[in-house]
Length: 295
Image 1 (cartoon, rainbow, N blue to C red):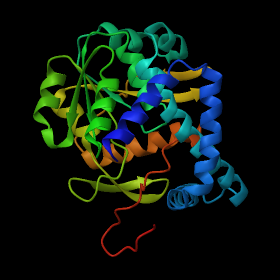
Image 2 (cartoon, rainbow, N blue to C red):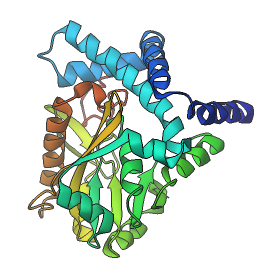
Image 3 (cartoon, rainbow, N blue to C red):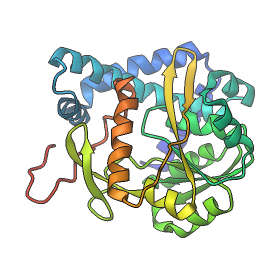
Image 4 (cartoon, rainbow, N blue to C red):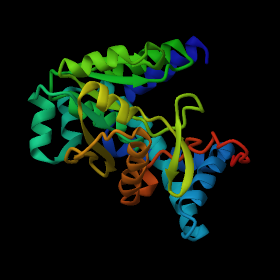
């Protein structure tokens, strides 16, 4: 991507931040339907994921889920315009935090180490924004560097817009993550993707063996932190961010069992709104030795 293209793209998002919300969402709906038709390789990934994870659903139902997934992809991407550039009052009005009141209070004003388990629903950036708007606690997040340096800077600055956010790359290692937790910080963790064979374990995800990083168990143990799930949902008015009670008896002494439990509980969250999960990702790309590729 050229510098000019990147500048124009970022400029478009800045301008879109001031467009009425219904028009932004409407544009996203149209764009999503177009992407579902034109982005054939990615559509095949979504179709494969849904077939593997929901084999009992009819093909017609899975096609509807796939179309809606692409709409959510487009809408959530365009929503970053107002999340990162609209006035703070506008952002706050469109983000609703619900759930365990005592945990929400602890996120905002507590001092104990806490990991926010944030699965890859399309509202994950909205959830991070909503929670960091209301706390000065140091909050660390790990993210993958974008190929384009200008886009990478824009994403990083957007995610650090509110609060006291520290963005780390995977190459930074675990020391700063654990140190931040032990100082009473928050860790916004998204461990439910396929990051390859290195340092992963194979555990079931919808009955299919999936390469999964055991980082949730590992960081909770090393950082002496409780784990709080945060589930984000696109709504007609913006986003609803549900903060669930902290997991009891987690982590255990078995990181593989912990990681299998994480996937099992994640399935329960997904089943409430399957089209809002990040099915465009090749979740089953890494296979156990001897298994054929699925994509």
